[in-house]
Image (cartoon, rainbow, N blue to C red; front, top):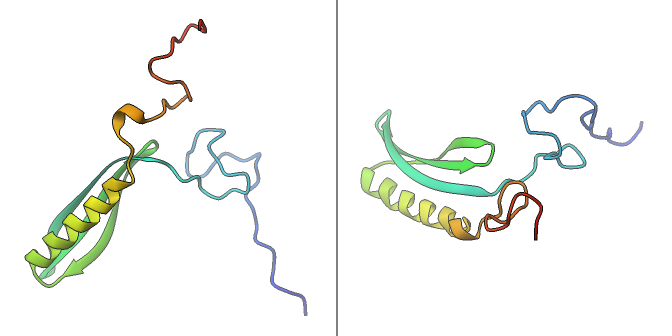
Length: 113
């Protein structure tokens, strides 16, 4: 009997199945953690329960995740406020965000100092 099988890493010669641009992949094929640009929590009634969703805008696009469900709207709204507040704590202010190509917005683009 041999030990556990080694995990299969993606072939770097193949295109990224998640559609990330070249250079945005982790060296071992794991997804790169992206900085969030915005976060918003919403409460939606579903099947007699109140569901909290967290919508997050990333560089690669927007994602929506179901966070949890609650028996009444008051509890769901309270949870949504807490979840949204904590998500937004980790989003840097817009004026301090790096430009996508690692250039600061106040730097000239023509290469001059």
